[in-house]
Length: 387
Image (cartoon, rainbow, N blue to C red; front, side):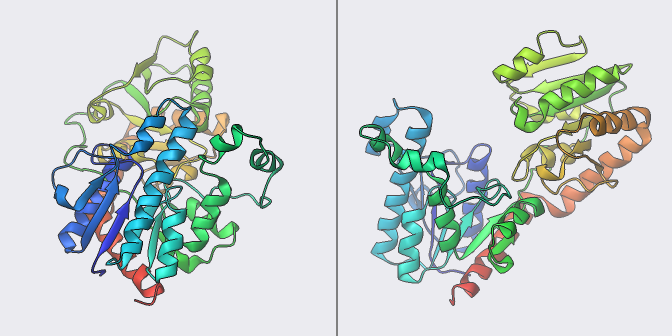
């Protein structure tokens, strides 16, 4: 185990999404007795002592909040990165844990000092499994832009920065086998990649006491094309199932909103829902036909709620085809239609899949499992870094 960890994330600690991941990571290191300092923009948890957390919520970069989202987000990441590099330079740390896009300066400093580093990747390699030139034409134009555009462009987190981070990090945390593949295609060595799945609160996300009599399919997430919502809508229209409803939990993008203007009456759009667990519990099957995810949080939650799932390999590793759900190729309306039809026709199979999914997350994907895997990753990074 390390003796003094520096953790940095250009988001928050505690809450949902990546903020929850950050909180669980800090709990692991705090309980291990080696959390020295964490850098973040806000803190909403009360387990890790605030004395160990340095907040940048009043950093001067906040004055740039009027800028377009990509510029402001980039400026915040660079500000955090600069602070982390300063903290490393001051000495006293033997491990850095940081996030992709947040850390090129701090990784350079860690490398200079001989401090091993762990880089967390929320999705895939930036090239998404494709072979790309060092600089594309659009990137060349971006770098040659005149003032004042050049000043704004310096705030962006570029693909070149992210790829430099991959090269400098000692160990890279990837969320799924598919994500891992995208790094291998880009030429990174397998020993540098550590498979680190997320976790789920299996007490909060539990199966319903009694299954729904109606076949209730649910999608939870941003209603965008990348997540396959347009494919799901087309498949649902084609099937015209009896005694069935499709519930969409999330806000539709403009292009998805157009597809919903004449949607069948058995499609219900909920928008934002505070109690996702309740919506999942009242459903029969979770459908998530995304074409690109790190490891979709909702697949853990749906499994914990005892739902059969129809999803893609690109969405993560929670669903094992034929064991706790069905895997289909992304952007394949026919495959999705057949999978929905199969589960609609065989409720016993749907229940078996749901029970197997619950068992799988309880045995492998709780937050306690997550913290144990993270400590293993820290040991691996120290070993690779010669500590």
